[in-house]
Length: 437
Image (tube, rainbow, N blue to C red; front, side, top):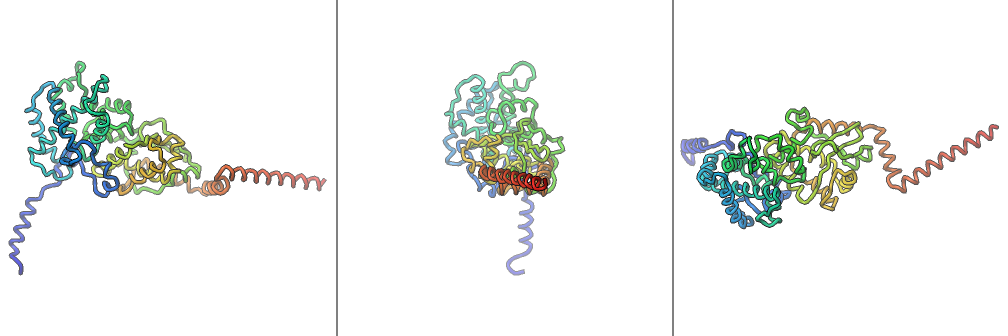
């Protein structure tokens, strides 16, 4: 064989194969913190990129975020000094022991040494915990937060971003180590549970604070990070998408659905679903009334929804119930007229001011999203709506309504013509009767 010894090639290939490592370790937390796929990220990079503070290894070193590093150190020191058992060595040893699990929690390769990763996770975790505690006690006792309010608001959303997470089990370990009294069932501990503390920074865009507190009391286990916690709380708040519910099952491809204005023209009514506070709980009654829980759309809604969708796409595509919801809305909303109809019925609370901006947001959320199957509940709603809209009598009624009653003037002219026709018929009948007599 020209060009080299084949045995040398075999040796090199064997060496490459021997060095191959699994991408993820076999643990529940493996690869739960993801970099958002490029085809999704490129649609709105700002929605996935922290504005103020870098957490974890993915955005470490970003020049725009370096100003917060000094604040992070100060908050870290504050957490250690605040702890019931101030022992730096035990905190650092805890993170060192967890380092292999932490490294495995990130979907991409972390090009940091063990020591570097331990330092990053330790400082970031202590910063998060101290930040949450300051927010908690400021809210409870109406005290000050030692950062400008605008900065605090930005940190809220930075801590929610999928790429900007540390594993939740690290936060829990350090917190319980610092405040062992929170684990005691007796007495009235000064500090809240880690789960209750986490609610301080979760966005109210989709779930209200009162609902979050109610859900927290029932307890939630197996949390990967803050993005995952919020998703779990949304599913827990639903009447339908509980793990034991039959509606959770997935089935075939997504059928087509008319837009909101088209459905309305065909006789479908839209109402707010006041029985449920979960945005996922869509209901269809008697083919004619689609009940949808109200959703507030403001400047942060897209950020929240995009990161929840990205997590489902990366980690739990077989249970992508929020993705199903977005696909449903993507069908319903095509133009600002669809949004105006939703606003009129109280389904959308528009804080953006521009209906077209809301339409563009929902339409862009569904781009490059993978949805190989659909949940059973939504599929049944799609099928029933399509069956109703396909009826010949419904189609004819919609055509007559569109052609002759599309505007108030057109409707008035149509009814006037019908009225005149009826009068003419009556007059003709009377004339015939008089002729006969």
